[in-house]
Image (tube, rainbow, N blue to C red; front, side, top):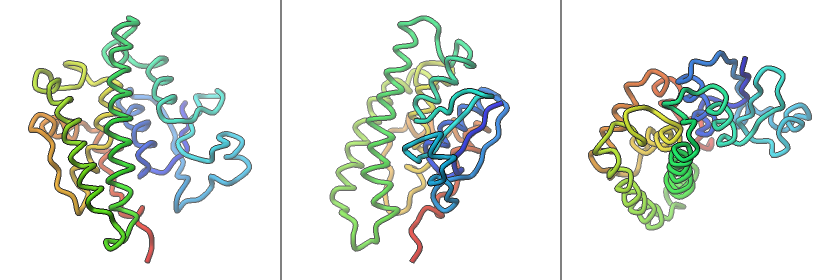
Length: 215
Protein backbone atom coordinates (compact mmCIF):
# COMPACT_ATOMS: atom_id res chain seq x y z
CA UNK A 1 0.00 0.00 0.00
CA UNK A 2 1.10 3.54 -0.71
CA UNK A 3 1.61 5.98 2.15
CA UNK A 4 1.69 9.67 1.27
CA UNK A 5 2.66 12.50 3.57
CA UNK A 6 1.29 15.90 2.58
CA UNK A 7 -1.68 18.19 3.07
CA UNK A 8 -4.65 18.05 0.75
CA UNK A 9 -4.26 21.67 -0.43
CA UNK A 10 -0.64 21.36 -1.55
CA UNK A 11 -0.51 21.53 -5.35
CA UNK A 12 2.34 19.02 -5.50
CA UNK A 13 0.48 16.62 -3.24
CA UNK A 14 -2.61 17.08 -5.38
CA UNK A 15 -0.74 16.00 -8.51
CA UNK A 16 0.36 12.80 -6.79
CA UNK A 17 -3.05 12.10 -5.28
CA UNK A 18 -4.81 12.71 -8.59
CA UNK A 19 -2.56 10.16 -10.28
CA UNK A 20 -2.99 7.69 -7.41
CA UNK A 21 -6.77 7.97 -7.72
CA UNK A 22 -6.76 7.68 -11.52
CA UNK A 23 -4.65 4.54 -11.23
CA UNK A 24 -6.91 3.11 -8.51
CA UNK A 25 -4.08 2.47 -6.05
CA UNK A 26 -4.74 1.67 -2.37
CA UNK A 27 -3.23 4.39 -0.22
CA UNK A 28 -3.16 6.27 3.04
CA UNK A 29 -2.45 9.99 3.22
CA UNK A 30 -1.34 11.97 6.28
CA UNK A 31 -1.90 15.72 6.62
CA UNK A 32 1.48 17.31 7.20
CA UNK A 33 3.13 20.62 6.33
CA UNK A 34 1.98 24.27 6.46
CA UNK A 35 -0.58 24.71 9.29
CA UNK A 36 -0.36 21.01 10.18
CA UNK A 37 3.36 21.16 10.92
CA UNK A 38 5.39 17.97 11.20
CA UNK A 39 7.99 18.57 8.49
CA UNK A 40 10.66 19.62 11.01
CA UNK A 41 10.55 16.43 13.06
CA UNK A 42 13.56 14.10 13.02
CA UNK A 43 11.35 11.34 11.61
CA UNK A 44 10.19 13.40 8.63
CA UNK A 45 13.61 14.94 8.02
CA UNK A 46 15.05 11.44 7.86
CA UNK A 47 12.62 10.71 5.02
CA UNK A 48 13.15 14.01 3.18
CA UNK A 49 16.05 16.26 4.21
CA UNK A 50 14.40 19.11 2.28
CA UNK A 51 11.48 18.95 4.76
CA UNK A 52 8.93 19.37 1.99
CA UNK A 53 5.84 17.45 0.88
CA UNK A 54 4.92 15.16 -0.71
CA UNK A 55 6.81 12.13 0.49
CA UNK A 56 5.64 8.65 -0.47
CA UNK A 57 6.53 5.09 0.36
CA UNK A 58 5.28 2.00 -1.43
CA UNK A 59 5.08 -0.73 1.16
CA UNK A 60 8.55 -0.93 2.70
CA UNK A 61 10.23 1.04 -0.10
CA UNK A 62 12.64 3.89 0.45
CA UNK A 63 10.89 7.25 0.92
CA UNK A 64 10.37 8.99 -2.40
CA UNK A 65 10.18 12.77 -2.67
CA UNK A 66 9.80 15.37 -5.42
CA UNK A 67 6.37 15.08 -7.02
CA UNK A 68 7.78 14.50 -10.52
CA UNK A 69 9.88 11.58 -9.34
CA UNK A 70 6.94 10.11 -7.44
CA UNK A 71 4.67 10.42 -10.47
CA UNK A 72 7.18 8.72 -12.75
CA UNK A 73 7.63 5.91 -10.25
CA UNK A 74 3.87 5.36 -10.12
CA UNK A 75 3.66 5.49 -13.91
CA UNK A 76 6.54 3.07 -14.39
CA UNK A 77 5.23 0.57 -11.87
CA UNK A 78 1.46 0.78 -12.07
CA UNK A 79 0.19 2.71 -15.09
CA UNK A 80 -1.40 1.14 -18.15
CA UNK A 81 -0.01 1.63 -21.63
CA UNK A 82 -2.51 4.38 -22.33
CA UNK A 83 -1.18 6.47 -19.43
CA UNK A 84 2.57 5.81 -19.79
CA UNK A 85 3.68 4.11 -23.03
CA UNK A 86 6.23 1.33 -22.98
CA UNK A 87 7.75 2.34 -26.30
CA UNK A 88 10.75 4.60 -25.46
CA UNK A 89 9.96 7.21 -28.09
CA UNK A 90 6.27 7.39 -27.24
CA UNK A 91 7.17 7.62 -23.56
CA UNK A 92 9.66 10.41 -24.26
CA UNK A 93 6.97 12.25 -26.21
CA UNK A 94 4.59 12.05 -23.23
CA UNK A 95 7.39 12.99 -20.87
CA UNK A 96 8.45 16.08 -22.80
CA UNK A 97 4.91 17.44 -22.67
CA UNK A 98 4.74 16.63 -18.98
CA UNK A 99 7.97 18.57 -18.42
CA UNK A 100 6.77 21.41 -20.61
CA UNK A 101 3.56 21.67 -18.62
CA UNK A 102 5.28 21.53 -15.24
CA UNK A 103 7.96 24.12 -16.02
CA UNK A 104 6.27 26.46 -18.48
CA UNK A 105 2.74 26.39 -17.12
CA UNK A 106 2.40 25.06 -13.56
CA UNK A 107 5.55 26.53 -12.06
CA UNK A 108 5.15 29.77 -14.00
CA UNK A 109 1.59 30.20 -12.73
CA UNK A 110 2.42 29.27 -9.15
CA UNK A 111 5.46 31.50 -8.83
CA UNK A 112 4.34 34.55 -10.80
CA UNK A 113 0.57 34.63 -10.28
CA UNK A 114 -0.76 32.38 -7.51
CA UNK A 115 1.79 33.16 -4.81
CA UNK A 116 1.70 36.97 -5.27
CA UNK A 117 -2.09 37.02 -5.30
CA UNK A 118 -2.44 34.68 -2.32
CA UNK A 119 0.37 35.76 -0.03
CA UNK A 120 0.82 39.49 -0.68
CA UNK A 121 -1.52 42.19 0.52
CA UNK A 122 -3.20 44.10 -2.35
CA UNK A 123 -1.02 47.15 -1.81
CA UNK A 124 2.11 44.97 -1.99
CA UNK A 125 1.27 43.21 -5.25
CA UNK A 126 3.11 44.06 -8.42
CA UNK A 127 0.07 43.79 -10.64
CA UNK A 128 2.02 44.76 -13.75
CA UNK A 129 4.21 41.70 -13.22
CA UNK A 130 1.15 39.52 -12.58
CA UNK A 131 -0.51 40.75 -15.78
CA UNK A 132 2.67 40.10 -17.75
CA UNK A 133 2.77 36.56 -16.35
CA UNK A 134 -0.88 36.05 -17.29
CA UNK A 135 -0.16 37.16 -20.85
CA UNK A 136 2.72 34.70 -21.04
CA UNK A 137 0.46 31.93 -19.74
CA UNK A 138 -2.09 32.70 -22.45
CA UNK A 139 0.64 32.33 -25.07
CA UNK A 140 1.62 28.97 -23.61
CA UNK A 141 -2.00 27.87 -23.48
CA UNK A 142 -2.14 28.44 -27.22
CA UNK A 143 0.57 25.82 -27.63
CA UNK A 144 -1.67 23.38 -25.76
CA UNK A 145 -4.68 24.60 -27.74
CA UNK A 146 -3.14 23.30 -30.97
CA UNK A 147 -3.19 19.82 -29.45
CA UNK A 148 -6.48 19.99 -27.60
CA UNK A 149 -8.45 21.12 -30.64
CA UNK A 150 -7.88 17.71 -32.22
CA UNK A 151 -8.19 15.36 -29.22
CA UNK A 152 -9.60 15.49 -25.69
CA UNK A 153 -6.34 15.14 -23.76
CA UNK A 154 -2.79 16.34 -24.24
CA UNK A 155 -1.53 13.14 -25.87
CA UNK A 156 -4.71 11.93 -27.54
CA UNK A 157 -7.85 10.10 -26.46
CA UNK A 158 -6.59 9.06 -23.01
CA UNK A 159 -5.41 10.81 -19.86
CA UNK A 160 -1.63 10.57 -19.41
CA UNK A 161 1.12 11.86 -17.18
CA UNK A 162 1.23 14.99 -19.36
CA UNK A 163 -2.32 15.81 -18.26
CA UNK A 164 -1.46 15.39 -14.59
CA UNK A 165 1.18 18.10 -14.90
CA UNK A 166 -0.84 20.38 -17.18
CA UNK A 167 -4.29 20.01 -15.68
CA UNK A 168 -3.22 20.17 -12.06
CA UNK A 169 -2.94 23.97 -11.99
CA UNK A 170 -6.04 24.79 -14.01
CA UNK A 171 -8.45 24.71 -11.07
CA UNK A 172 -6.51 27.48 -9.35
CA UNK A 173 -6.08 29.38 -12.60
CA UNK A 174 -9.83 29.47 -13.25
CA UNK A 175 -10.89 30.17 -9.66
CA UNK A 176 -8.25 32.53 -8.23
CA UNK A 177 -9.78 35.85 -7.22
CA UNK A 178 -8.28 39.01 -8.66
CA UNK A 179 -7.25 37.65 -12.06
CA UNK A 180 -9.14 37.29 -15.32
CA UNK A 181 -8.52 33.93 -17.03
CA UNK A 182 -7.73 34.23 -20.71
CA UNK A 183 -7.45 30.63 -21.84
CA UNK A 184 -8.43 29.55 -25.37
CA UNK A 185 -11.76 27.78 -25.77
CA UNK A 186 -10.08 24.40 -26.28
CA UNK A 187 -8.23 24.74 -22.97
CA UNK A 188 -11.42 25.78 -21.19
CA UNK A 189 -13.25 22.75 -22.64
CA UNK A 190 -10.34 20.55 -21.55
CA UNK A 191 -10.63 21.93 -18.02
CA UNK A 192 -14.36 21.19 -18.03
CA UNK A 193 -13.60 17.59 -19.01
CA UNK A 194 -11.15 17.30 -16.14
CA UNK A 195 -13.70 18.69 -13.69
CA UNK A 196 -16.04 15.86 -14.70
CA UNK A 197 -13.47 13.26 -13.67
CA UNK A 198 -14.12 12.07 -10.08
CA UNK A 199 -10.41 11.83 -9.25
CA UNK A 200 -9.80 15.42 -10.36
CA UNK A 201 -12.83 16.72 -8.49
CA UNK A 202 -11.76 15.01 -5.28
CA UNK A 203 -8.04 15.71 -5.27
CA UNK A 204 -7.49 18.87 -7.32
CA UNK A 205 -10.66 20.93 -6.89
CA UNK A 206 -9.73 21.61 -3.29
CA UNK A 207 -10.34 24.96 -1.52
CA UNK A 208 -7.11 26.86 -0.88
CA UNK A 209 -8.24 29.77 1.32
CA UNK A 210 -6.46 28.17 4.29
CA UNK A 211 -3.17 28.97 2.56
CA UNK A 212 -3.69 32.72 2.96
CA UNK A 213 -1.59 34.34 5.69
CA UNK A 214 -3.48 35.05 8.86
CA UNK A 215 -4.05 38.77 9.66
